[in-house]
Every structure is written in C-alpha cells, then in structure tokens.
Image 1 (cartoon, helix red, strand yellow):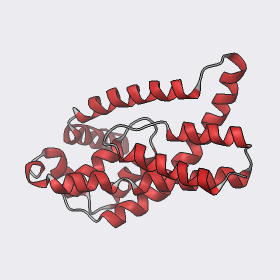
Image 2: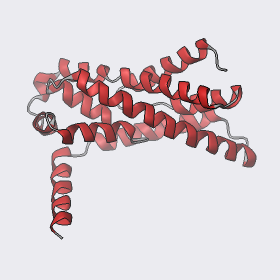
Image 3: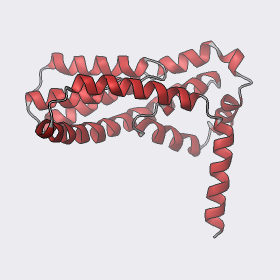
Amino acid sequence: MLSLALFVFLFAISFLFNATPFFGGPYTLIAATALLQNGVNPLSFLLVCIFTGLGAALSKPVMYLIGLSVKKPLQKNRNVMLVKRIGVNRGFSATLFIASVMPFLPMDDFLYLAGGAAKLNVLSMLQISIVAKIIKSSIEISTEILGLKGISEVTNINPVEIGIISIVVFSVLGYIIFKIDWEKTYQEAMKYVRRLTQK
C-alpha cells in the first residue's frame, strides 16, 4: 500500500503542474511510475486516481482568478464573449467536461480563463472538473502503466525523459490552441452538427 506522504506528494504535483497556465506536466506519468514501483492493486489505483484528479481540478481556479484579474482587457475578446453567452447552458458544462478529460490539450485552462473574465460560477465549474479529472487520471494512469510495462520490455527509456518531451509538446500545442479563433471554430462545428441532423 502506498504511504500517505506519497498520496500528498501526488496531489501536490498534480496541483502544481495543472496550476501552471497552459502548460501541463506529466503528473499521471509520475503517478503511474509510483504505482509500478510500489505495486499496483485496485485500492491503490483508485486512491491515486482520486488524489491526482482532485489536485488537477482544484488548481483550475488559478486560471479563473487570472481571467478575473484581467477581465477589463478581455471583456471585448470574442472568445470571452462567446463563453459568457454559452456559459449558462448545458452545452458549456458538456464542453468543460470534455475539455477537462481531453489528454495533452489544456483546453480547460482557456475555459477557466474566459470563465473568470466572464464571471461565471467557479464552484459549478469545479464540480464538473473534479469528476472529469478523476476520470482522466484513471484513463491516463492505466494506459501509462501498460505503456511503461511495454516500453520497459523493449528499451530502457526513463519516464522522466518522456515527461520532459511531454512538457515541450504541451507548450507547443498550448501556443497553437491559444491562436485559434474559438468563435469561428464553434460556428463551424455548429454548422457541421446542423448538417448532420438535417440528413
């Protein structure tokens, strides 16, 4: 069984990596490695997923506060106005849930930033993120455990090196996503959905 100190450590790194705006870190990879080193069993796996999920979700108000603190220059931003318009319906909740579960892409950071600028209810957003991040942890950690076992049979690649590569990839993807026009993308997606439903 993993120690309480290790659970606290995993919560802390999950919080810190997710509190860094637009740049994630390999916190689930570290959690997967810790599980492999200490032995994987259903209870330890469940607890690790809960602790990492909570750490990741509870860090998101950092982005919300950044959005809130710079709301004046962001108020006329088209993406913020879009979030403000759709932030009161179920579509936004579903979007936030999907964005929080998506691997590699820090889409939920953008939604929290815009949510802060639009003064959406952060507690409602957090409820969605907590469930989504625990699910995300369970998917990623289980996949990474299988992946690490497979890689260890073929090569001696250090998980830390994989983590460094991941951070570089997250940084590049975060910059690309930041340059996307959300409103145009949303409109195109809605047109596509309407075309599908009309067939």
